[in-house]
Length: 116
Image: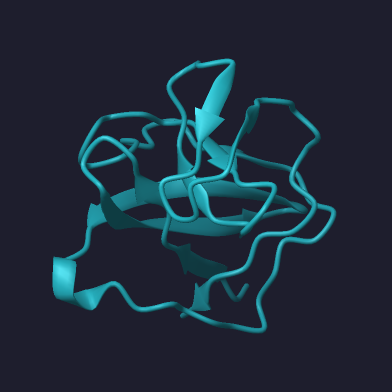
């Protein structure tokens, strides 16, 4: 069976750096399986035709979380759609666009990244 996986590049607000998260489709659900640091000069935007529309997304057991701050939770900015580390705050500011808002859980409607 062919594996379907992609890499998303969230931002760590504490380190002010992007990092990679490998997500893999297992059955009908998607799981974060691995995270890794990205050299500062390599912060490119990955694009792919692989997407996670209307799918469940969670961390697979053993997922190490952000290599900079250790968080294994992420938020998706309601303004610029960027992902970034979440530390339990009720009000959060996106490190990419500066949008500030109240944290609400609405599920993941769409995630995309670089396929491999």
